[in-house]
Length: 563
Image: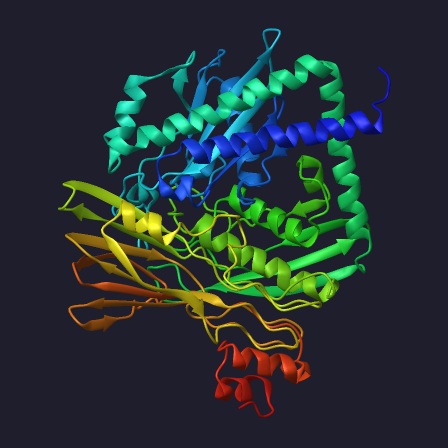
């Protein structure tokens, strides 16, 4: 076979990316739930028919799903091969959300579909969408004090939800019988399936135009080049071992912090990540399954080297030792509702804290590192129906060698944005009384951290139950190279005129609320980068003028006289 020319290779690379991007757009535009339709808490990708390894993923999909979807696709392939799962036929779509089979938390539901060419599977298409409820002990699935995965919701092994293109009514009935507001899920299910079907059509168009063999050759070459680029990026790092720590506030059950110990060894053109010495498996839902732990490392390196094209090849030079015996390698029946949204970001923070020592000009101080998971479930008497509302929120990014951190950026693990206030107020019986930057939250440094978000929500009608699975309430995001930590997360619930702060600061479940009660949240600011005394006084004065810091805060954090 003739070697691919550079232009054809580039065109096919862009074409495969476009297939995934179009799947992402289809999913969001057709979905019913605001968390998918507005917040884009979803992802789509193309995976190898042989081992499920990543070929391409949508640029607008959550990075944390990079590792987990290839892991879960691989698991489906293996289960089919050994008879634990029914063999596929054209038009079949499997559904799976089992965390221990390559997942995250139960709310992240994956669809996996084979694409056939000439009677054989050419590749698999897969996507993940965050369903606003999957059953369990609390609305929204974010049980802050679960001690077993069964308390978190319905767990599905790979089963065919669609058979030869038709929705299986029995599987669908089982799902609907175990989740809240079940009548609304059909919109998300249809959207999720439609995204895969669009991907199949677009991929077939590419294959028809260029030929199957040419596309297969391009996929192999793109994987090889991604591995080479990652190795070249790693090669500039000085050989050695770089160590760091990050901390989870608590597991939601035992009110003590969990420790992530990380040693990154750089040798030649590879990096080895060793989490030995991290905390043991915990009682509460802040355990991380292996697929999420791996993906957390991958996405952190993606932040550091964004120029490396994303495919399974980019992960080849990254050796992650299995963290057996720690809370970063959860096994059944450990609860895991906080793994994808929170623990993953502490893992990424540990990677940043280690790598900033090796690449100070390229790596930032710690970002906010919390998805701000706030689930509210109740009944709206004016509309005569139940609801489950899921709020995610941004925070400050860390400063870096070149500039200050971004304010109210999305979480480290994704590109999800907070749903617009107007959409949330239309869909649910709530009023946002306050929604603004959290002034003073950015960590001081030569380049300060970005600012978090401050918001307050009031319940307008009926009764509801609130649950929080957040983090960075005990410790703010780490500063780097002399910079100060960003402000920690803050949650306050006002009931009957009295203020209540969760004992675990950022985690609590099943808080009873009624009309007039309010929830106030302040998300973390990013860590500062470099010595705060080296910050340009004019920049500090400008921050004071804009109201980002008070004059008193500026004097305490940066030194000097301001106002």
